[in-house]
Length: 423
Image 1: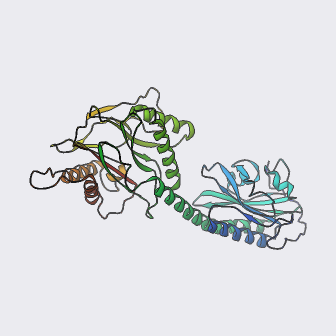
Image 2 (image 1 turned 45 degrees about the vertical axis):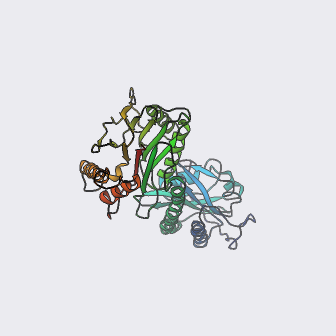
């Protein structure tokens, strides 16, 4: 149990910069060099101002349930061995859970979970949470190789150092996450959907993030082993790297099951099962459709996703009454998924999208859907009867975005998929 009892201070000396009392040089291991610089600066400042022998920074992992050793001085192997401390356990985990400065005078197996701290000869510890906007992003702790009584001024000094450093660290972490998300965007969202038989396809993706970083929306079009064509538009709740990571996993899982399953409701069921089993707490809406070229039927299932628009040859576009079943990741006893089947003859066009296209702050969703319907009607009105060429799906896609989005900054990710069956 961690307590705040104190013992008399014993005078000691801090090792020279760049070395540790155990003979090991300082170590920092994080994904981005700017973060490494920020953590190194933090450790050096803490060692100098607190006149400590060791220092370490542990940052919260993406789950928010653990701390991961990210930088250390004087503790051999802590970073290299990937030390991970559950929040609420051990010294650093308790500091994070209680969100306050904590001192430990006598380091032993009852107060410290990480054996490397004991092996380093640390006798006393002082730790402070790294917090930004009320959220713990990590823990900074310093140690003494002799029994030391940390005074109130030491508590205040360490927390002040942590508070000032936390904002800089968070800024670097955010920048690194944006870079990683940008890589995912380039990899997972192709400029053009994969060509498939029987369909002309165009798509758009626009990130709702002000810096253009991908979120959780995606689209997909692929030919299945059965000869049918799978079309998907999905939207993972959230933004940034976490949503992008979840999106890539859901997309991969859906593609994998499409190797053996060609029923859209069953595909969404498998996706839902995966999400609830391995990623409890996430939520996503998905529109999943399977085209059978042989009989010209388009079967659709919706996991709480916005309704698509269908434009049959010679007719104005209209919404398809696809009943919205539960989103992926949401459980309700007895709930089942349904399939809606419509005719999809040659020349027919389907328009599927994520809610960011029609839902905007200050705009009623019904008005947004009406705007999309009108834009699609205007874009598909040319039928060649008056010397006008039938517009390509790429042109239709561009006109929808120009009319519905225009130059207005978007507050949410947008995925748009337009597919027309070839004559």
